[in-house]
Image 1 (cartoon, helix red, strand yellow):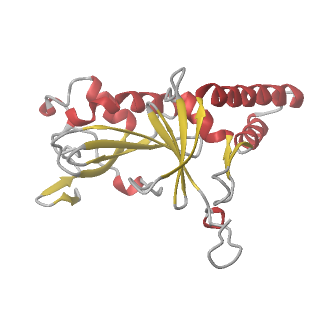
Image 2 (tube, one colour):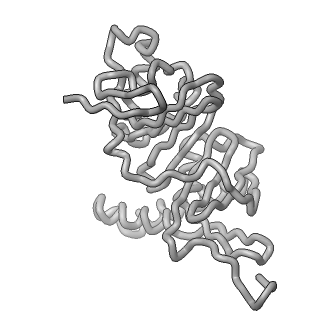
Length: 245
């Protein structure tokens, strides 16, 4: 039996129906993110959120971070659904979105989305970093991974994965916000995602923003999000009544 659930007042999405409610045109500009995500992980899922003004895609990458892109979608009807990246991309690329009777739309896979989602507002900018700095950090990390593989004699896939994870989790950028908030540490993991997804054109910048437990690295063509453990959330340091530091 196909389950149906309400996406917005007066509308539902069923298991065998178009999860976008006939609004495929609203998500076409998200295709570059879908394509890159499928290259990194053919089984990746994308969460699509349509509002009356925008279309937003969120993808969980093998790097262990969320990647997102938001584009204009004037006049869209609100929808919040999850589908397979490859399924949605194939549907859009094949022109089947315009002729839904020719092929079924990607199936809704909402129950498979088990990650939190970053907020859409309330972000506080703490730093802006030039793209050449980000590229230099990612390049250094890649060289370190190559050196580690040579040093270990490439003994096996499992050990290589352990070494890669350790390098991706290494802190390569520390940002302070004028002494009011504790330093924010950025690992190689989200920086690698920014470059691998093509979010960072030459001559651009990455903005580092905070909102609650989330860190956002916002580049020109998309953003990468990191969800911090509760104990690592930025909390203002306090030195007495009326004297935060």
